[in-house]
Image 1 (tube, rainbow, N blue to C red):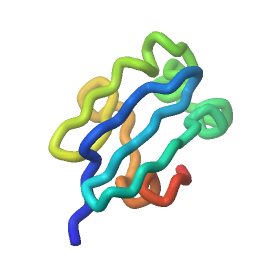
Image 2 (spheres, helix red, strand yellow; image 1 turned 60 degrees about the horizontal axis):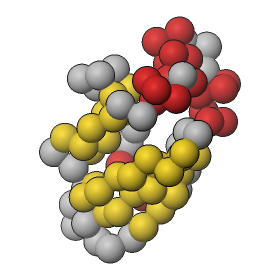
Image 3 (cartoon, rainbow, N blue to C red; image 1 turned 30 degrees about the vertical axis):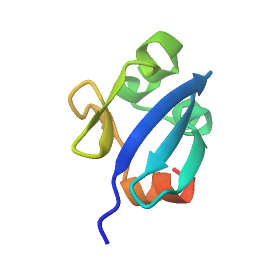
Length: 80
């Protein structure tokens, strides 16, 4: 079964609630990942205004034309 993201809602801070095509709902906090990042292209997403600017394209979440994205299965499991 191919799993995709059908909805993603910004909850606050660096947290997003995902609804997947198989009905699973998962809340993921991206802050720990972003805080540990060394790449300035990733670190910039600590700015909440930039972080909030994501889109869902073809069942996947992305920021700035795939500048930052994550494996769907990891998000489905609630871990990045």
